[in-house]
Each structure stands twice: as C-alpha cells, then as structure tokens.
Image 1 (cartoon, rainbow, N blue to C red):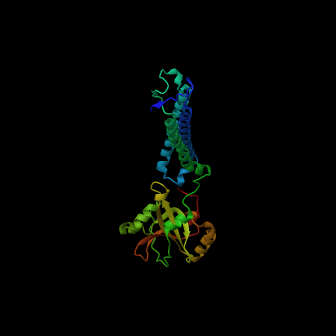
Image 2: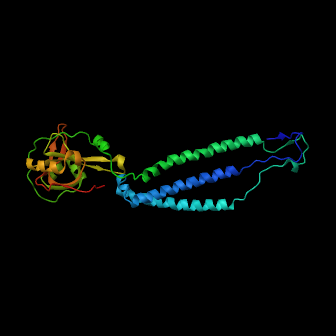
Image 3: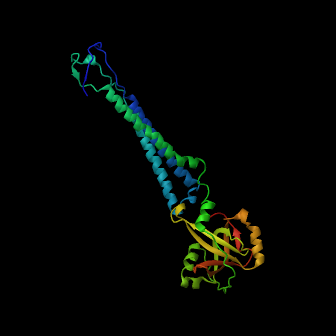
Length: 305
C-alpha cells in the first residue's frame, strides 16, 4: 500500500524488512517433516525384522509393511538431498528499502510495502508455522510406543474375555464311536462344521489335532474351552473360533488341572489331540467338542499368530 514519508525524517534514512526468518521457518518445517517420515520408515522395517507385526497384522500383509517402510526411506533420502541442495543454493538477499534511492519529494506517496502490513503478514506466517510442532507431537506418538517395545504381545486378557463371553459347562455327553481317518488340523473347519449338519456327520468320530488357547470353565473339572482369535486383516477385526475340550476320565481331569492351574495358565497356548463330536447348547446351537482320551491330549506350546 502507499504511504507518505514524514518530512521531519532525515533524508536518506531508510527502513529494513527482514524476511530471513520466514525461510528459516520453512526449512525447519521441511526438516521436521523429513525426519518424521524417515522415522516411520525405520520403524516399519524394524517391526518386520523383529516379527512384531504378528501381533497386529495377518501374515499376508506384513511384507507390504516392509515395502512401505523401504519406500518411505527412499523418499526421505531423496527429499533430504533436495532440501540440502536448496539450502546450499539459497543466496542471501537484502529486502531493505532505502528512501534515499528514490526521487520523490518529501510528502509524496510511494509504493513501498507498509511495515505494519508486513508485520501483520509475518505474524500470520509464524502462527501457521507453529502448527508443525503440534503435528510432530501427534505423529511421534506411534514412534514412542515402538521405542517402549510395543506391540510385544497379542490381544489383552480383558479384550479376549469381552470378545469370548461366558462359557457354561455342557455337562455329561454321550461318547461317539471312533471312525479313524485323517486328522483335522484347521480350527476354522471345526467351526464351519458345527453349523452344517452334513459336515457334522462327516467329521464326528474322526481325530483332530488343534492349536488354540486354553480357558478354564468354572465348576467343571473335566471340561475346558479352547479358542483361537483368527485375524482376517488386523487385531481389532479378530473373530473368535471356539470349541470345547471334554476329558474322558475324571483322573485325567485332575492331572490337567495340575498341569494348567486356572490362576497361572489361563489363556495358555496348547495343542489338543482328541476325537471330534458335537454337542447342542441351551440356545439350540451346536458346538464342537474334542474328547481327550489320555494324558497327552493337551500339551503346552508356543503362541501361534
């Protein structure tokens, strides 16, 4: 905007507007953005390397996380190099305006920028650049979790209990005739069969060897619950696959209770070997039951994701 020179001001006196801090804020913002992107790339690669992704993602998506991390690191390197070249090629330039270099008379209007307006513009810039710090704080939160060693285990016990609900004892069940045949290893197949009459007839009496987590049923010494949280994509979308473990003899129930006490071994990962049968619940639904015949029917194992 135009402004009038004060006639009382000494001729030749000028006023300066420094814009150096504006470029400094710009480069600081760029550096912080490059840093946070590079940090995310490093975390993605390390989580894949240390097999931490198994707690939150199914296997088919884990390699994609590695590729994404590598891509981020490459982009970060290219942007960092570009920024370094830009800083090195930046020439300092003087934005000061000297009234002595103009031929207008005192009191005449000139088209120099108004210092007050320039100051107002810079204030707006400072406010905008200040937001980068809050963005970095928010983006840094996942990085802090990684530095704390998280995620380091599967779904929490509280989450599992809420997802699984309460299991009531089935009571006495009639034994089914053993038919032999090829053992079933897939937990999903058992859950599908429990809802299909033809599949129930095909599987009942055949052997199974299933990996899952053990859950005690209160007041039922010869019965346990077996479950497996199947992730279709990631942890929050996990679906509970459930079955029951029925011990054939009371003496075996006592030995299992000693091997897997409720307080110390709840949600223990186990391999269960038994004979498949199906029982009807009070709600009219069928549930898969694995009947255990000997002391090797339940064996502790490492977690499987």
